[in-house]
Amino acid sequence: MMRFILPLVIFLILSVFLYKGLGRDTREVPSPLVGKAAPAFVLPQLYEPTKKFSPQEMLGKVWLMNVWASWCGACKDEHPLLLELSRQNIVPIVCLDYKDKAEDGQMTLNKAGNPYTLVIADA
Image 1 (cartoon, helix red, strand yellow):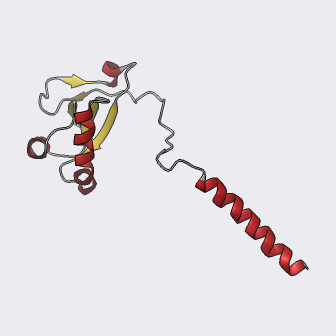
Image 2 (cartoon, rainbow, N blue to C red):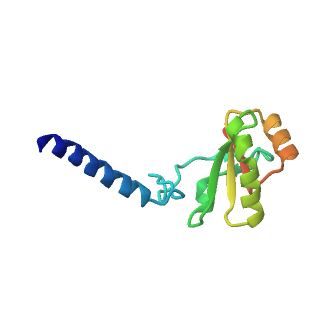
Image 3 (cartoon, rainbow, N blue to C red):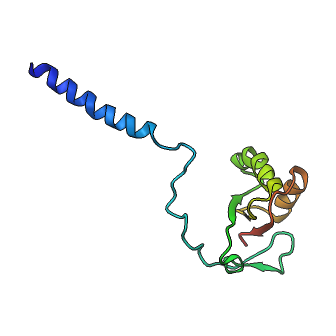
């Protein structure tokens, strides 16, 4: 009798974990940053470096910040999705061009299409 109890207990515990896992919405990506204020910074715009951008300008608005670079493979993969999101005009998309040469970032966005409302450089 005891030899059946341990496997049964293990099976029940695994069943509970599987049941909870199947009940989750896989489209929901939990993030500790949702609903939190963006960190304070002031960075130059990519196309007009004399103009600056700060998250304070977007205070009280919903917006998406995407970290991007012309050399980034994953960024190229997600680019069509961002273009589609931009076409739908659901939310303004601000881009942080990360560790990139300004000329490379501008050239890549001009070629592939620029889905961003604003592009800032990491100075």
